[in-house]
Amino acid sequence: NAGVTQTPKFQVLKTGQSMTLQCAQDMNHNSMYWYRQDPGMGLRLIYYSASEGTTDKGEVPNGYNVSRLNKREFSLRLESAAPSQTSVYFCASSDVRDRGYNEQFFGPGTRLTVL
Amino acid sequence: SQQGEEDPQALSIQEGENATMNCSYKTSINNLQWYRQNSGRGLVHLILIRSNEREKHSGRLRVTLDTSKKSSSLLITASRAADTASYFCATDADNQGGKLIFGQGTELSVKP
Image (tube, rainbow over all chains, first blue to last red; front, side, top):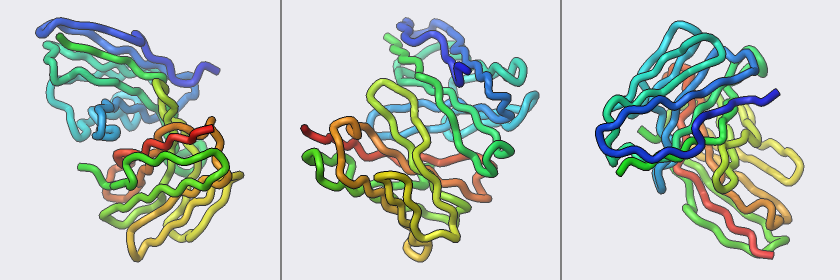
């Protein structure tokens, strides 16, 4: 099993450009998450999807949109990138049914720089 | 908003020493989890402690939870250079809608 995969690993954008970060999991998990990680800030939740067909805002949703394409895939879109969105983006998945609690499994991250 | 606050922010020790990291949180929780992040990688789950537990062990890891003080600590005994990483606490609470809230992390450096 690959677990959680993310593409691309690295990306450089110019201000105003758009892009979509892709995430897929092969663990049959119901829930998926997008976080951003900035130095000294820990992980902050951007959006999450508790189950296929649902999405909800997290702590820092402004400037982002998401799509839960199917149970496996959860994408994050930046419509008009800004330098403040320079960060490392992590996708995660979980399923409370597996262990009885919300243990999250993380992808390797996408390092995004917006110039 | 961040629920977990960790200290210290950074910790540097010699191999063989013990490393202790602390996490404080604000509201009642169902459980508290610790994750590890190696440089340039995603987070990996280490250990979970439920709100009705006071201490838990897993190999060289020991986690304690004091719900009256709303705090937890992670102890790594006999540390190794390979333990060098960032460590995050994460809380799971009924009022968080199934989401985890992560602390800001402790950066541990273990020198050989």
